[in-house]
Image (cartoon, rainbow, N blue to C red; front, top):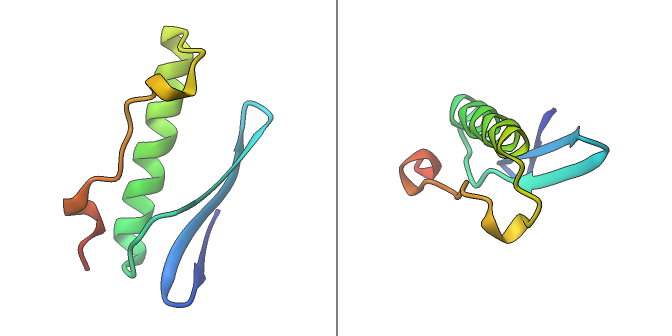
Length: 68
């Protein structure tokens, strides 16, 4: 779920019994949706590959995605 807080969109969802609440850093709903999709895709890939250590997760905030 996306929601807006002080003009910035946030992600609030659950994946594999863990709550993910994260700032997208974007004022654009479209860019926030793209960021949320990329985050969920990366989580699914990491789960499929068997990553257990969150420090090895390879998603990061793409500066190009966060521009207004």
